Length: 368
Ligand code: SF4
Image (cartoon, rainbow, N blue to C red; front, side, top):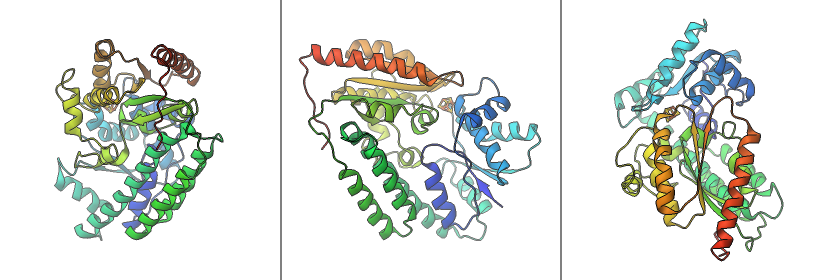
């Protein structure tokens, strides 16, 4: 068996670590590119949401490079994510590809199916061994997330363009080599120090933007055209509403974000009082949190036809009016081009700076 999995931000680092601990042979699919997108668009249903199309592309490229077993997360409605694995399987079977697919259902909703999936890929490992591997890899994944969060906070202040990104990438490299819990803790401390040593201009005036929306669009830089880096490099301090380990962790306490799902639900209550699938309610709840914290604006990313985020998007005009906060939504599909996204972001930043000046040009020093 040679396993593979789709790309989504840093998930390949976490998955590689886990599969090595379980002694499962694996292949990391080629990085997502325009070719991956074209393959997915050619074979997936036209009205499927964009993440499904791209992950089909990742799977086909993984099979082309020697994988024979595809690993996919399951889901529990009400959005279409719960159908992804089955849809991907049927799409690839229809074009005659030969492979096995293993779906990892949520451990909280379907614990027996979760264990069964691990038994399929690592039959020689006991439940205890799998649990230990999961726990250690997850702890490492959380460190990756915390580093990324720090990157988004600091990069707006960097003196030399690219220096924070270079320090972050060096930190990821250090972390990737760590195996034991002690090594992971030491590598994380070293990686954090690398980031904190980057020369910063702490007097620089920056805008504060919260970036919210569908998890795949937020986590995968290929699909969001690297908007986070672009915003940071245009003097924008960023907080993002989704991190990988918070998203896959069953506790829903979200230690990376620092705010639990329950609290996010309470914050959203006046506008969206129930779960609508995906991050629909979280998008509204996090927006309210960013408003409370004095952010200048909100950037909202969603794939075309995404049901939960379309609900959130219909709420934004009223919320933006009530709370006096500019919100810029990007509905992204395979036709979307980077130039159009950047042009709209430039206009949005102009608007936010003019509002800042109209309020008396209050300077906010947010990096600490
Ligand atoms: S959240 Fe939206 S884009 Fe993501 S799987 Fe669900 S419907 Fe598709």
